[in-house]
Length: 213
Image: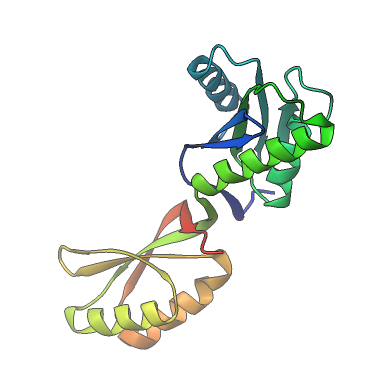
């Protein structure tokens, strides 16, 4: 079954975290495929070719959930798994986190390593701006000039996703809504225009809402 809503990150980001002179550099990016994840991993490694460890974890959602992680030479379970756990706890899909480490000369121990990798990943994810993606049904609603402002006000009040308004033969409002909201949209349009509007389904697309938590 195709997903209707999921949480991801908005943009690539990089953050640094230092503990006991070790530097942890988190690179985070939205992705859509495992191939994109591996391309991003290679690019992150090429930015810091002299680093010993490039720990990573990624997850791709959809009908089939795919995920992968690697400790990249760190003690088993101290790098990739804490990063993947963070991705899971934050309910993120379609994301890769690569944490590059430069050793500062002081051993952190397995617990310290896990906490450091997790903290760096958390900082990177925050910088990449988590957001909510929702599949919306897109409609073009053609109305009479006298109905346009009243309908637009009603649609905004009902919290539908408002797109642009174009003016050809008549004003055409571009509106997005979730599938379960379609009856409400149709009723609002008919009520506000006395049935004079023409509603055309344009298809479905993903809409982003920035995370405000």
